[in-house]
Image (cartoon, rainbow, N blue to C red; front, side, top):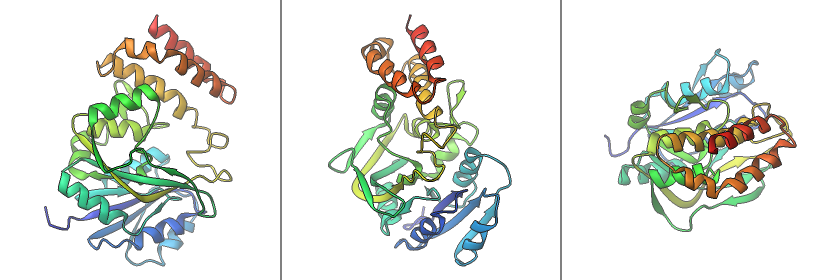
Length: 289
C-alpha cells in the first residue's frame, strides 16, 4: 500500500437540506489522496445540481430504492484503500481524513473512529460525544459485548469512522448488515457492521473531535424518532443483537439476566411512542424463560 493510501469519501445522499454543507466539508479535507463520490438516491435533481458545482466530485445516480442499498453501494463501489463514509447532513472536520487514515495505517486497525459532536440545524454544538478520554485500542470482542449488553453504540454513526477496504471485502456486501439469521438494514446497520468487521480484531479510538453528527428535528433523519418510520428498528434491533450474541456464545444468558430490568424499562419507555415494541418485549421474555 502507498505511503499515502487512497481514501474514498463516500456520501450516500437523499436529503438536500444540509447536503452542500456536508459536501463542502469533504472537499475541504487537508488529506490529498482522495476521491469523493456522491451516491444520489434523491427523487429530485437537487443533489446532482449541487455536485455539478464541484468538478472534483464524482456523481453516481442510484435509482434503486432504499437507504441501506445506497449505503452498501457507497462503501463497496469505490477505489479506495480506505473508505470514509459521510452522511448527507453530517460534517467532517478539515483534518478528519488525515488523522483517521494516519492512525489506520499505523495500527492496521479495520476501524478507526474519533470523538464527535452533535450539532443542530444551525451548526451549533449541542452535545460532545467522547466515549474515552485518551487515544486507545479496544478489542473487537469487548466492543461487541459492551454494545450488545448496554444497548450503546459508543463508536457512533458511519460518519465517525474510517474502514479498511480489505476488511469490508472480507465481510462482503451481502453480509455487512447481517448478524445471525437477521438482516439489520432498517435499524442498527452501523452497529452490526462494526461487529462484523472488527469482532476478531481491535478498533482504535482517536480522542479528537473530527466529525459532527447533525440532529435536526425538522427533517426525517434516522435520528428522529417522531418523523422516521423506521426508527422503531433502532430500538428493537438491540434485543435481537443481544439474543443472537447469546446464541453465538459471545455473551452468556446469565449476563443478559443481570440486565433484564433495565432492558424491560428501556422497552416499556419506548412502547409509549412505538406500541409495536411490546411484541419484541414478549419475545425477549420468552427467550429468557
